[in-house]
Length: 276
Ligand code: C2E
Ligand code: CA
Ligand code: CA
Ligand code: CA
Image (cartoon, rainbow, N blue to C red):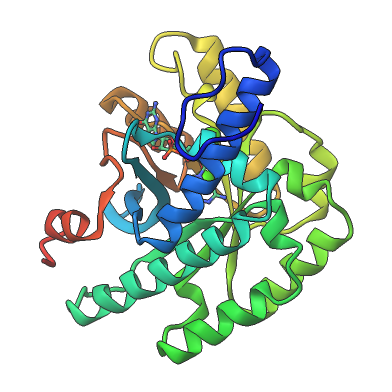
């Protein structure tokens, strides 16, 4: 079977072939979306629980597909990681984050919030990631403390390279968060061997904490573990006031979730903060 531009996959293809064809199409559409400026950055607020203020935002990528509508980043980020498209896509997010910070500063926000940016393993392996980030920050006259990089445990396992990158970040003043803690690769020795500024506790651990003392006990233990490493804990997926109350009681520093705010475009995030 030959590939016709834009045509539906040939009926005679097997399901594996059809899936491969769909993937190739999606990949070229993602490339077009990147070049055509159809990718967007949304920002989700991060609440500093002790002060009750929005301390920062997580930058989350959005793609409004021309035929399918919004596609989950879980789908297209994975695809981008399989090819090397994640590198330019990641560069796009870094650039968007920096321009958002410049806008925030120009709106005279009393204290500049930090932006927390997801970084894929493939990006972390780019030799000049940190250097080019520092250059962009310098060009915009922004402090290194204005960005935080979120990495996942699977990346932490890429020793000793990750350790070197994290050291370079810390030396430059860029903070680092361990994302999705408690899921997937839960090798505790890596948590103790590497210094993180923030550890993001996966939303799975927040489910049921209002009702069940068992779930609350688990969360308490995880928060204790995070604190023992000297990092601040952040709880993901906070949806109810009761959950937030539990987090406050456990001494968790940051809360992120629909209760505090959904991911939205910069303009709306600024409006919500009275800085539009
Ligand atoms: P993540 O890093 O764990 O991001 C948090 C996800 O939880 C986001 O999903 C967010 O919209 C969602 N979320 C936030 N609050 C709540 C809540 O209260 N309840 C529930 N049920 N969900 C909540 P999203 O935006 O669909 O992103 C999915 C994943 O895609 C992210 O998970 C991250 O791993 C990846 N991703 C997103 N943007 C980027 C990016 O720019 N670069 C890279 N490398 N990965 C990205
Ligand atoms: Ca994240
Ligand atoms: Ca996460
Ligand atoms: Ca997640």
